[in-house]
Length: 135
Image 1 (spheres, rainbow, N blue to C red):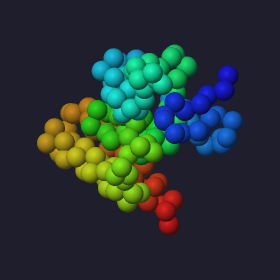
Image 2 (cartoon, rainbow, N blue to C red):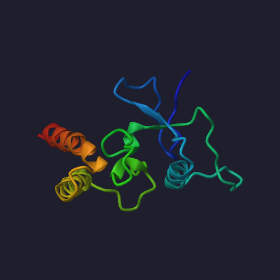
Image 3 (cartoon, rainbow, N blue to C red):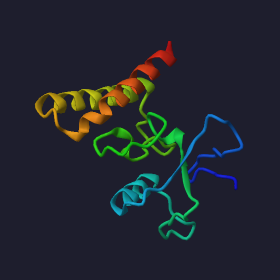
Image 4 (cartoon, helix red, strand yellow):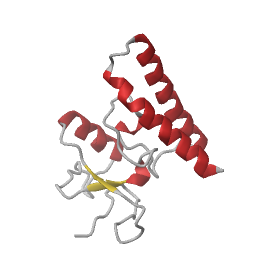
């Protein structure tokens, strides 16, 4: 079944590029609502849009290219959309990821048994990967 990104103005679908990935809406109701708010999508009659079980968001709307399960990570909710008036540059996106990685490192120093330390290596790898891909 073809998948098409449900973000307003996005025309990405799974028949375009193999490098695209698509992500279903989270089952957690609070996070689901955050995603819905971020999409800012309404029906033509002005009523709120409700995603179906097949609705997906493509990786183009996440800074690192995929959603994160860490609530403090910038990719906990999709943030990159065409409607943003202050669209972040690649450098600003990189800085967001770096700040998140630094915060995780600090939390590990103060509490080495913290679960948040699990994402440090993953976030550092993403930061390094995006820095290398720009060169």
